[in-house]
Amino acid sequence: MTSWTDDDGLMDQLADALAQESGVPPHRRRAAYGAFAWRTVDEDLLDLVHDSALQTTAAVRGAEDARTLAFAGGGLSLELEVDDSTLTGQLLSSGGGVEVTMERADGESRTARTDASGFFTLPGASGPTRFAVEIDGTVHRTEWLVL
Image 1 (cartoon, rainbow, N blue to C red):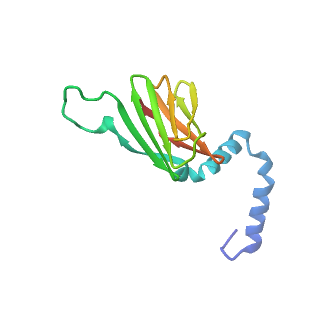
Image 2: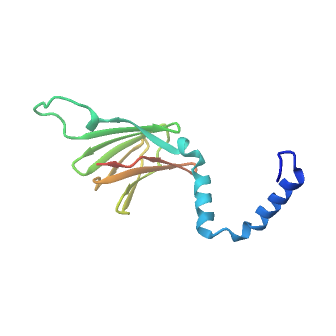
């Protein structure tokens, strides 16, 4: 194409690009589909809005050892409390019976169903972990964090 007004040159280049479509390697095709699937990442990500481990407090005798975390996004709120390796949580802004999955970096995952009030319990909360909540076909995930 010699200039921006060369419509015939543009059509020739488009025809060449379409002719090469079958030559796209499968790994590049998967990467393109994956990138397209993440177009709603801002809507699907639950942002960390509170982490008690990040608060600086004076050492007080009898202070709670439990870590509390809160995530929000996509009209949802996920609140967690980690005590030893047991995690208790509540999913707000949705009805009961929703599955919350704890995904660990080692590939292990555990799933719990919320009760009518949105509460759930998961054992084995330690190490690099993230949480996934699926509602109406949309999966909302937290960022990775170390418990």
